[in-house]
Each structure stands twice: as C-alpha cells, then as structure tokens.
Length: 256
Image 1 (cartoon, helix red, strand yellow):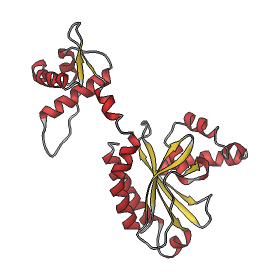
Image 2 (tube, rainbow, N blue to C red; image 1 turned 90 degrees about the horizontal axis):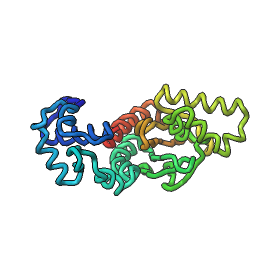
Image 3 (cartoon, rainbow, N blue to C red; image 1 turned 30 degrees about the horizontal axis):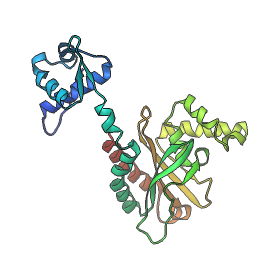
C-alpha cells in the first residue's frame, strides 16, 4: 500500500503516521492494528507508537469493540477552517507576481461559481499601461477563453449540464454550440487556450488550467494582452512558456 519515493530528508516516523492516515482514509472502514500494519507493509510493533500518538492527538479513534481504528473528524475540521480557494489564492500570490514581472503583463486566477467564471485573484502588470480585471467579477463561461479551459476540466456529462444553464450557449445555433464543444476538446489536447477575446475587442486571452480534473479544486490562470502588443513586442510562445512554469509551481504548492 505504502509508496516510497526518493526524498531529500528521511522522516520515517512521519511517513508511518501519514501512511496510517492515508490507508484508513482509502479503506473507509475501521481496521485493527494488524490489518493496518499489513496494509502499509509494516509490522504491528512498528506502528504501535504511531497509533498511540495519532489517537492521543485526536486524528484517529479506537472503537470499544475489537479495538479497531478509524479516522476522526479532526482532518475534516482542519481542512475546512479555510476554503480550498483561500489556500489557492495564498499560494498562488508569489508565482503570479513572478509571472507578471516576467511577462510585464497582468495575470488573473479564476474559478467556477454558480455556472460562471469568477475572478478570485489578480496581479497587476508593472507596466504603466496594462489590462486589469477586477477580483470578484463574473463572466459567462461560454464567452471566455478561461471559461473554456475551466470547462475542459470537467467530464463531458458535467460540462453539458453546466452549458445547458448558460444563457449565451442556449441562444446559439447548433453549429455554434458544436464549435464551442470542439474548442473545449482541443483545450484538453493542447493543455492551454489562446484566442481573441469575445468580450473585449483588441485583446488576446491566454489561459492554462490549475489543479486536477478529478478534484474539487479547479481553476484557471490567464493573461490578457493587447493584440497589438503581440504583433509588435511580445509573442504568445514566450508568455505561454512563462505561464506553464507558473502553472507547474502552483500545482506543486497545492499538491496537484
């Protein structure tokens, strides 16, 4: 059960404690000391002290019948003191700042909220003149590049369900709807999207996904630039390269 990978510093006791928590979570049923030990490839005596410590700290509970262990609600309580998106905003701050300084462009982070794109964080460009998208602003998913990237992170069934409630998508012709669905599939293949903005003329949007498809934590990192700048001083390739570095850094920080 337990997986090992090279680490810079060995922490056997911590590893065993985390293995126990992760195994109990994966199994989802109360287990004896021997069953846990077998599941994480340890002997019962090796994990005894870990079990005692975790029980004393309130992370696991031992039942009165047969002495089986199960997870308490402490992990749940700790994880819900701050929403996942609060943590995402916090860890993304400095990577986004670095991206803005590297590209000399503003960047923003968005999530899905009530079937719309919600801007939750923005880092302004160090340039005197740049585009700015205020935090807290909502946009239609179907009308933005970020929206299409975000939709690409959902299963096809969930995606269609969300779009069935999109006021713009419902008014489009069958062909326009198919074009949107095809563009979302292409995002899945490419891992990013860049396109002219449908909401603001003269603007090009570049967006990459943040997080995991099978997680509740899905977000999009985007840079919006003046199209004329791309033609004269910037190029999409250099911006996209910087964005992918930032994407990797944020994903690592949130454990994706």
